[in-house]
Length: 359
Image 1: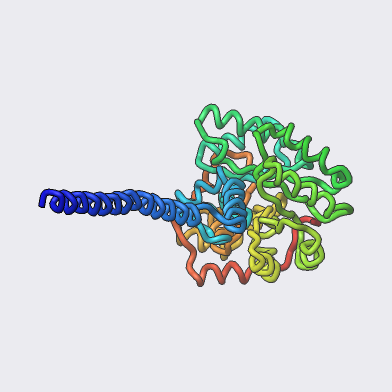
Image 2: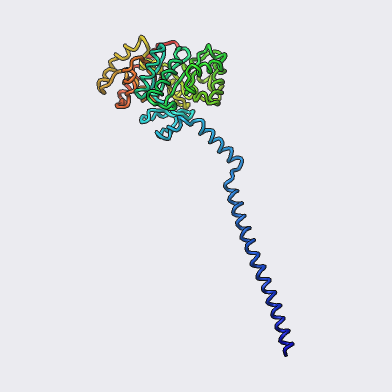
């Protein structure tokens, strides 16, 4: 009896041992299964967050595009001016196809001597203007740079808020790199916001391609052309990589380029006018035009303000030249009135096709 009981007891112990071992094995397998599942989730997460080569390349392109616009483009967000070529009358800027914003009213410095130019640039900047136009052939790039630097220091204006345009003349097209370096030295304002070719000439494509290289280097931000019309643009544009951001031509009520302006604008290129008030020797006649004077009287503004406002409402950036601080201030004061459709049409009817310079 005892022997039988002992045998049964030993059998139960053996069975219990086997069952216990099986349970332990199952319990030991569970952690391995859980860790395997966790690894699977981590692998899946890595697969979703690590970009493919195509995605990475796309991100890099976006980063480079963002970097090209840094200073000026930051203002696009602040002002809400995100539609290329459309004038924002609140921020008084236009978004260029280069990604930078440019003020829509400024100062032309043609024929201003050094000291006069310095003072005119400072008068513009002191009164809220931020766009300045110069050129190699104006012989005052150094004065413009001096005026900009003085105004930055005296009025606390950030460099990024100021937009300076200069131009290469055809006599410089054969060695454009030397010409660009000279402009950078003379202006001495860190970089050039926009460089134009002054007018068509031998090696103009060569010169423009050199400017494209300086855009890649960040020494020039935007490119453009001056005195290019329909035929010239049609021939020129297919030969370059970077579409001009701006074309600057003579435009005023007696020479309106009513066919050329929309041709340029339809290509996503902003139009800018020199001689907006008719040019030296013609300004008095234009400002005294009875149609323009009557519109000015109706709004309680000057004839010059009416003409400049007419430009802006056509989507044309204006750079009137002046050495008179009061006139410079007045030329900026264009946003307290608006011309009606009838007034715009009345000025449009003044077009004579009368060009006042040979370009």
